[in-house]
Length: 261
Image 1: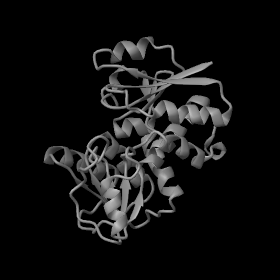
Image 2: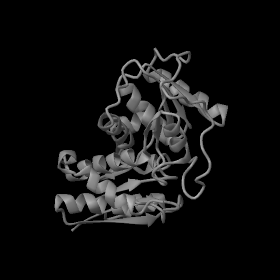
Image 3: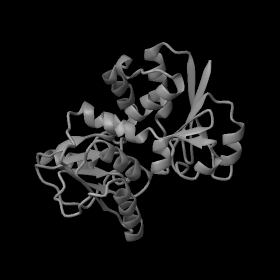
């Protein structure tokens, strides 16, 4: 039986085992998937001694794991963050999960402008996905100007025509604002009924921010979609085959929704 896991600290709230067990169940694959508490001091030892067939990486290790890996795929190298490891090589499937979410919600990025709230690893992965899929411009809204400026400089190296004067059509929350248990917090940003709001938080299923957007007529996309698609993309790397068309998405969502508040 193949063995997989997600590592992070803290890790107890991760729903990755439920997501992956449902994927394996649908594919009729004999595999297990656990969550493992790995602190920053244990990270190097874990990477070099684990006997897993592959593993996912969550906070706070997505960037600190890089020096301990044998190699990185091109997207992980550019983004500077890893959320999937196979045979000592680091991958980033967050941006793939994001683009699959866009595709499955019939959202076109052509000639659109976007503002990302946050400047961490998720913001970098999503910026990379946006640029790969023809976004017109990306602006950043972050608590600290230094991190905001660094992310913008990185975006401009990949997307030299980026303009900050465009009015955003798409707003993406890449912060933990609104995440359980602090469900009453939400991003402080102006939205209207022409906005498209995309959430990376998936617990609760509909954050206070998404509820507010829906009430004023904005298009809203839950963070659950991206969570599911990055997991499917990780499984494709580990199994070495395309599985997305074999997965019944609604069944996966149904299983996960039972665990969400």
